Amino acid sequence: MPAWMVQHIAAAAAVDGIDVDAGTPVSLWLAGLNGTNELSEIPVRSIWISPASLRTKRTGSLLETLTQRQAGRPPLVVIALPGASSVRELSKEIQYQLLAHRERPMAIGLPSTALRGGRPHLVQLGALRHFAEEWDLTVAVDLSGRFDPTWEAEAAIARLGERLGLLRIRTTASSRSAVGRDRVACRALHAVVDRERPVDIAVAPARLIPLTLTPRAAAFAAERAAGYIAERATIHAQALREDLDRYEGSPTSHGK
Image (cartoon, rainbow, N blue to C red):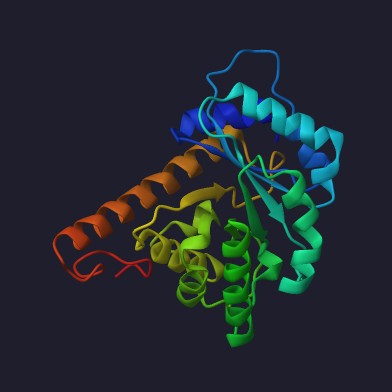
């Protein structure tokens, strides 16, 4: 979806930031299409880029343009890792980019295909957190794709600890009636909201765009998801203030 259309959708949904997926050449090109009209710019808070694309001139130009056009902090550059990357492969893959782009805030991006169930994956997440601490990076997790449904949401969020800075979910995951992978993502959302340290939440369309989803429908879905997230954050904050069980007396993601 072109950047100018995303701006209109974000404004209609009343969100405070945009998460851009520029991990492919096509999506990178679309991210640079700002149109000819002067828009009320909603800042790009994060942009996902593949390690190979990070070295290209087009990517550098896009990042420079985003930094100049929006006030405040520059966008978080999320290095989207290949799904099969180990921590050892990770260090080889992105150390060059880290050294070359240290002036920008950066994060390690875990795509949906990299998320697995079981203890070995949790051990890997612990090692990833230590790597992020060593390089002063944050971690971004993408739950908007087809990940392993046995992924242990609460345990994984706990393993990443304070290094988790961004969680991406589908609009259908932020619902009490979420099922399947959406329910797993909703559990991760609740675990994130339950933390003291704030984490950015990005909501992605549940269907392919733009062929099967209109901008109006995308804006409505994003606004509904943002409302659910705000509701859960309010309930959790109130529970913490009153020293109560965080879920006592409140509807859960299971609809109870």
